[in-house]
Length: 427
Image 1 (cartoon, one colour):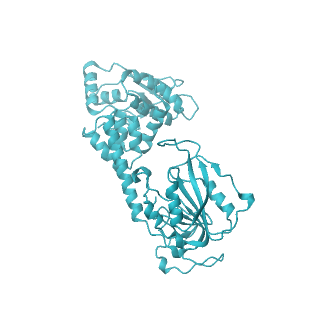
Image 2 (cartoon, rainbow, N blue to C red):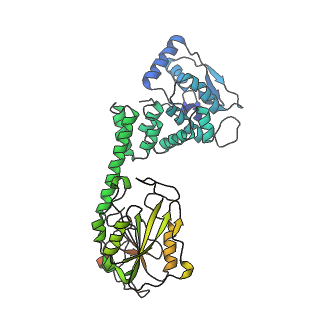
Image 3 (cartoon, rainbow, N blue to C red):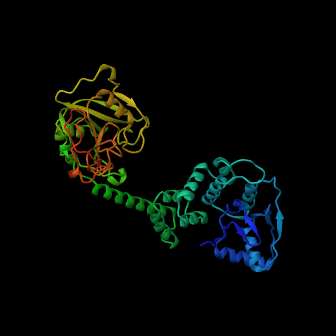
């Protein structure tokens, strides 16, 4: 543990300039050894001050005070850059690894410049250049400073944890950070590889806990809340492990058994998302839900991802109908390939909603496996959206839906109870 000396003032009335705390403090053993050297050999290097602020030499000043020695002081000219002076002096005195220098650069980029320079501070690039580190390293260090626990920050400052692992660890909740840091302090985790494994294990545990909450919050799809003429669905196909996806998945059999056939109107259209490797599964779902496949559109995600044969850059939006669905006007028959950059995993492009709304403006719509609030004018259902009941956008969650009055019939559709949605087995 480091003895806390990063205070705003020291004995004698000197305020501490922020630049004086850029470099990590000595730990107790280092300071005692340093103090003993001053006791035996005297203070060899003067303490630098400027306008009543201590610029460099906080350990020397503290040691002199504790030993009862009159400290040697030296005034720094006001036109001199304080930050760069401190860096120049300390880089030659200390043998710091890259991660420690990155932490210093991150702090340097956060403070305003001293002297007579009228600027908000150094850029990340300037700070990185001064400390001989990369800008990404500075950014990782800033993440540690912004989101890390005190224990984590001290460990990276001391060189016990590298800044890359520190940034990853800072993304976890504080209890998880402290758990890993406890093992670091005990010497259980020493190598960077061991720390990475511990971070991955904690991240997986957090994911599994979140999945358990979502699974417990899932409710069966209630077909009596229909009928809907437009069904838009992005099923949680189980072709990848849940902890990798970050949401609960469903088997093909479970998806097929959903009562969408009963939820949909006699005359309805289905828009069904599937990945490039799952067209047959999508056709099975279409048939099970009571629809007939018609065509498909392709979403070009711009940047290719992973794949066993090709690096996959697209996804399928299957279109199926049943009954007598209105013809799409020629003016809104869009190109079958649309391009929009991929965003977070599984999030679909906004233009898909816009195309569906243009094609069928007069029909009521529901999004199955909806995330967050339903889109304006739509109903939604899913375990990331409300309390599990099918609801219209903007309608408050009502847990006891049996106690709710029937909704007004505002468009010729069958009246239905409303609440906010949840996905059945999808996150």
